Image (cartoon, rainbow, N blue to C red; front, side, top):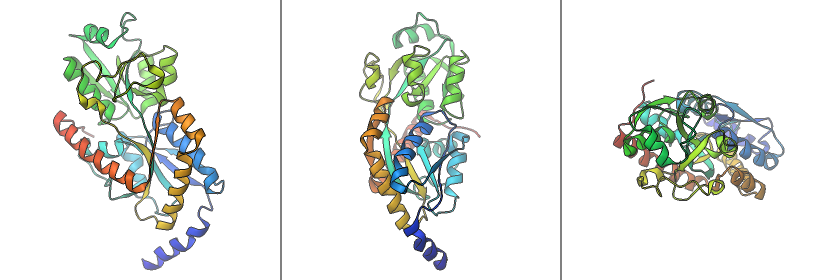
Length: 314
């Protein structure tokens, strides 16, 4: 084993000498995929122009892709770009095929974003506000989707139904893109979406945003209130992350090179412009700060899941 580690560290000076792969544990077209591509494009020049390939591996609320990343060779050529489901799905599924803290070395956080409750063609055009929606939905059997079982979107849908006294059936998807397709087709009434994946649909009027999570309004949806403004609880201010991690045994010199490339990429003006264009707040964190964020989110989510009795079979 010492010889293997020494060899890996010895190669760190020439790293990277072949393409790097970002495993994204959700399908193409969703918010996670969009953020991963922004990060990859920003990092490529900082890594000698070496290409970064996006490998979308959806399934089981992110478990499939994340487990593959945890078991990948720790050589810096297979990394994980993920979101808060990294700590959420294991908690609600009561399955820990990986340890979200101990099995990964944080490289950096890219940003944070609110998610917005939207409705589609299955809801009458007369519904224009959250108050309208709640009045219309009372006594109906609602179908609300989420981009992953046990995700923030899933929990927020349950919390909305609980606080507004609505009946809801939850429909879980393998990512945000297929959920959006079903909403546009009228297969579900609504759900929480990111601006990265669904912002253009909202701005084009194909789906209607009614209220957002977080403590401040989404910049491009200035007329759409937060749930907090509408009198819903502070539970809707839960704030997660999008960021890059590596398998934990990756040699430190390689982690250092990746962390520096990510830092530069995350702080580029063009990266900030692209993130803000999709209503993502640039909020870079270095590896130690990002690790503390992951640990804090894990504690917070465990409390939320326990409070909601949020569990998923599968």
